[in-house]
Amino acid sequence: MPLSLGVAELADAARIAEIHTAAFGSNAMLLAQFPTPAVRTALKKSIELKALADIDDPKTTVLVVRDPSLETHSSNAASANEQTRERRNKEQVVAFAKWAHPVQPNENYVEPPWIWPAGTNLGVLDDWAKKTEEAQLRAVGNTPCYRLTFMGTDPSHRRRGAATTMVRWGMDRSRKDGAPAYLESTLEAASFYRNLGFVDVDKISLEYGIDGTEICSTYEEVSFLYR
Ligand SMILES: CC(C)(COP(=O)(O)OP(=O)(O)OC[C@H]1O[C@@H](n2cnc3c(N)ncnc32)[C@H](O)[C@@H]1OP(=O)(O)O)[C@@H](O)C(=O)NCCC(=O)NCCS
Image 1 (cartoon, protein in one colour):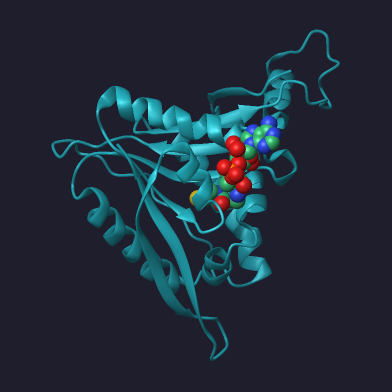
Image 2: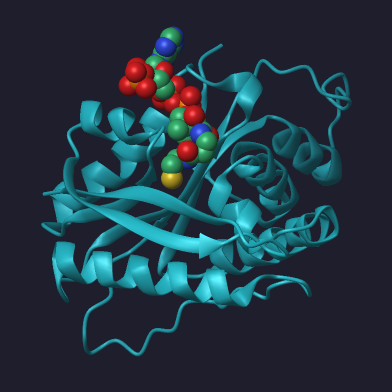
């Protein structure tokens, strides 16, 4: 059975947090911002709360890809009630993406905030946020755009086309609305976006200290534009 693309329901938030954690668990910037196992455990709840807020946010579309053929605990229930339907749907999610919509200058919009767990390295987090804001400004200026803020596929369901479907959703919307689509990519995923038609804008680079040590490291991503 083919994978199916849909809009996330509130019941998907916990599964989104699970996939996010699995997809970005070894990412160097995540490890720098959330430097201990305890803070990373707490982060999962923050990701779930942010997913709930984003699913409710009219200026964000949270996409999920489901695999309807996945056997789940509730799949045998012939007369699935609402609760079992929700659980089955949730268990079938294999990937998610968040597309932020263009915001016009006259709109009074504030993105739902993150609530970071105690122990977050706010210095590294704020420095990286500043770098990415500057990169977006260099790429699109103040032009309202679609923005892929996060995307992840469950590692055991990669290379099946889930992410491609979700990126193409944003590219279609971008073309229809005549608004560019912008994203920042890890170095590992850069060729994936290039193959889909995104164009490199520049490199984003941050030198940061590793918590509790004298060691400095450099983290890099690439900003991409589609128009
Ligand atoms: C990047 C990421 C989202 C890609 O997810 P994915 O669902 O595996 O992506 P797709 O299956 O659509 O495409 C991945 C590759 O598989 C190939 N592919 C797609 N369908 C395929 C299939 N049925 N069989 C074999 N390969 C396939 C694609 O051509 C693509 O190849 P490319 O990378 O050489 O261009 C995933 O690897 C991930 O979660 N990474 C960690 C987090 C991350 O980096 N997120 C994005 C950056 S912000």
